Length: 92
Image 1 (cartoon, one colour):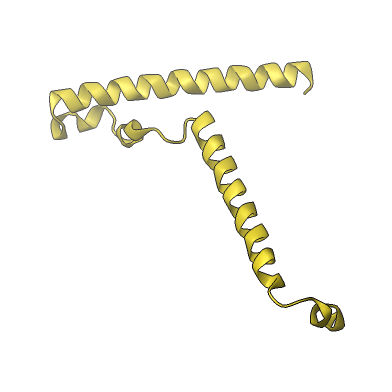
Image 2: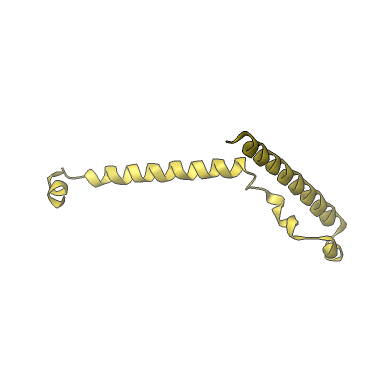
């Protein structure tokens, strides 16, 4: 195997690095696409940790926003569970 690498012309390693770099870029683009399709880039996710007991620590606008975000997260979860149940029902 070492003899094979010695017989290659000079400068072949740059092509190896270019291929590896391209593979990394493709993988990153795939995971960014996956994240955007699965609601992973939600700026309002920080409001999910609050509950009714935190109302006194928040302004009325923030509390209303947290309730809206929690409601939308619950709806999103219901949609996901319905899709998952349909998948299992169809046997996919």
